[in-house]
Length: 202
Picture 1 (spheres, rainbow, N blue to C red):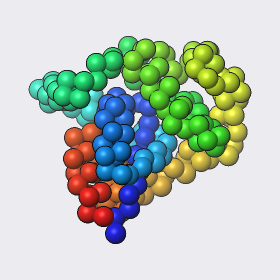
Picture 2: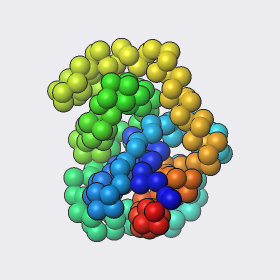
Picture 3: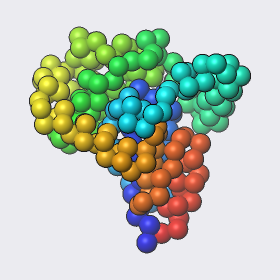
C-alpha cells in the first residue's frame, strides 16, 4: 500500500519550491494525505550529484532559459500565484535560513517557519542571507529572531542539515523540488499530477 504521505525535499533557494507550496497543500487535502518537509541544501545536492542551477546549466542555450521562464509564468497564471516576485538578490545563500528550518523543525514550528520565510524570499524580496534582515523579519513574524539565529550555530543543527542533504543525494535526489511517495521519486513542480496519481494507488 502506498503511503499517504508526500515528502518534499526543500530549500528556500528554489523559486519552484515556493510555487509548489502554493499548490500542493490543497491537492494533498483532497487526497487525504499529509506533507512532510525535509530541509536540505540545494547547493550541497548539486555538488554531490554534479548538477547545476538552470541559469548556469543552460547559460549557453538562451532559448532554453527563455522557455523555462515561460513555463514558470504559465504555472503562476494557471494557479493564481500572483504574489510571487523573483527575489532581486537571487541567488540567495540559504545556509542560515535552512539551518533555521532545522531549528524550527526541532521546535515544532517548521510549517509556520516555511510559510513565513517563503514569503520573505519570494513575495517581499528580502535579502535572506543577511543575519540582521533574517532576525528582524523573524521577530516581526512570531519568532524570536535572535534566539533562532543563535541556535543555527549549534553543531547538532548543522550536522542535521548536512545529514538530510547527504541522505537526499543518496536516494537519487538531484534538484529541488523533489517529492517522495513511499519509495517513488518525482522531480519538479510539473510532476504534481503524477504525485497525486501515485497517492491514489494506495
